[in-house]
Length: 139
Image (cartoon, rainbow, N blue to C red; front, top):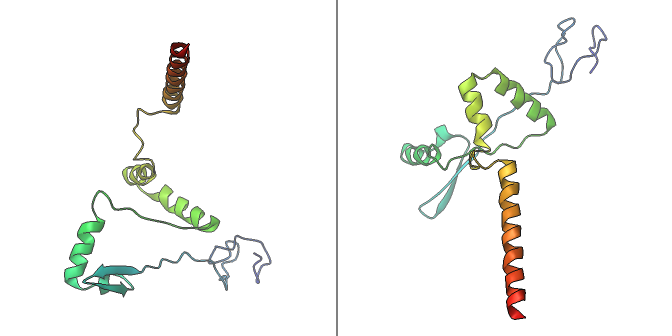
């Protein structure tokens, strides 16, 4: 984007020109929205935030969403991914490791790529051995 005051170029997502400080009339912002839908008592109830949920339901909601099976689903375009990466870099190391490791937590650490290939090779060898024994046993 080009600044209207100093005519120098700067990224679109900046709120001000880094050269002269002139405000960007249309900055790209990161917006957070939420919708909470709760199915309870045969009805689907929709709220704009967790604060709007009645206390009784909010207690249940918080109990179930803070457990082992809870997760965050994030959908972002390219610019959103850059913003998320910028925020993650500013987090303290333990929080950064926790967020970065959450996506691969289901895979055991001992199951490396090399070990997967070795297991696959062993299975293929086992299947070929069983097939050859069956074929030789028929004749």
